[in-house]
Image 1 (cartoon, helix red, strand yellow):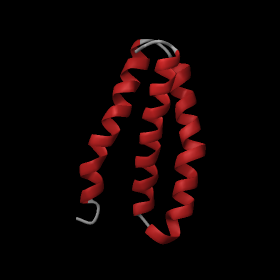
Image 2 (cartoon, one colour):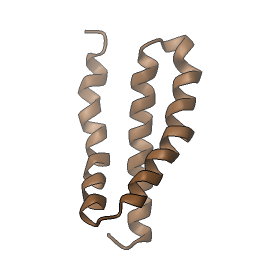
Image 3 (cartoon, one colour):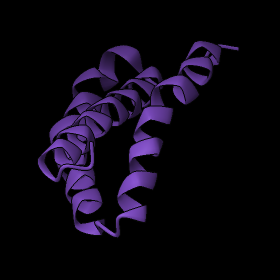
Image 4 (cartoon, one colour):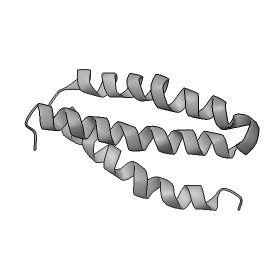
Length: 86
């Protein structure tokens, strides 16, 4: 029951990122998907996890994953604007 808040918030937050995944997959733009994942992994996920690990313990993993998905959705949105998907 400790992680129930994270499991409730995850689909609501991650859904936007997964929608963009579908749009880019349908447009066969795998390069943007790869780049957004690598940027978010090294710039958002790993630093967030390692900075908060000592304080939040297992919650740091949930926080890092949530932050990564938020920023990945944002990056894919910016890629879409650049490529005139929207």
